[in-house]
Length: 86
Image 1 (cartoon, rainbow, N blue to C red):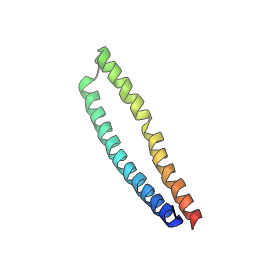
Image 2 (tube, one colour):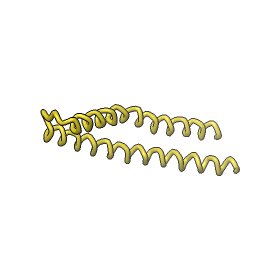
Image 3 (cartoon, helix red, strand yellow):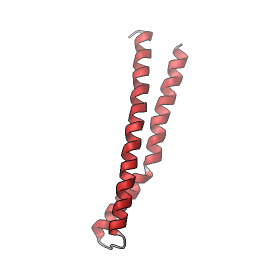
Image 4 (spheres, rainbow, N blue to C red):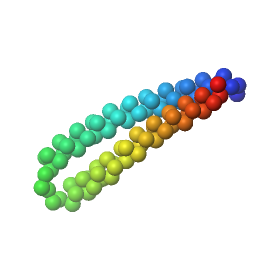
């Protein structure tokens, strides 16, 4: 693989990571809205399935920011490498 091909692959990877971040952000936004609606409907429920669902949603929500950072770090590191290649 030539340096030019590596650069092209890095550019494609950077764009894919940026697009992935946009898709992820939309999915996270949709999930947050759905969670708010579910919370309103199920408020006060003591059903164990509802409790388990709330716990699963909270665990998923805790992963949103770390996942965003992973996308951002992927772009940053690939762009840095691309810059070093010249």
